[in-house]
Length: 135
Image (cartoon, rainbow, N blue to C red; front, side, top):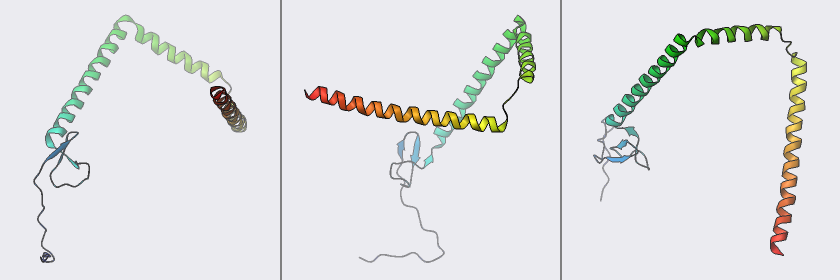
């Protein structure tokens, strides 16, 4: 049996025509092994509609919360709290870059030592429990 090679420059016809649905995906030409390379139009529309609905619901929830805070006076309290917090933070003394680097090194070394200690104790207890089980 001879294999025919199409002439150069002519597009090759695509084989297929089967549709395999896996996870909302449509595969007409067997482009992937697990079946699905191009999302079907219906799956895309469903996802888009669902996303818009979710956005509208969240916008409504945020609007209701904002309205309740506004009418109960809690929005003003929240604004005052944030303003007072910013004023207090301006009074704080912040560490210099060198102090921050030193603290970072101390914390990193402490975490490493604690990790090594935990691994050693875990291995000792593992050996001890296995020894007790064998008895």
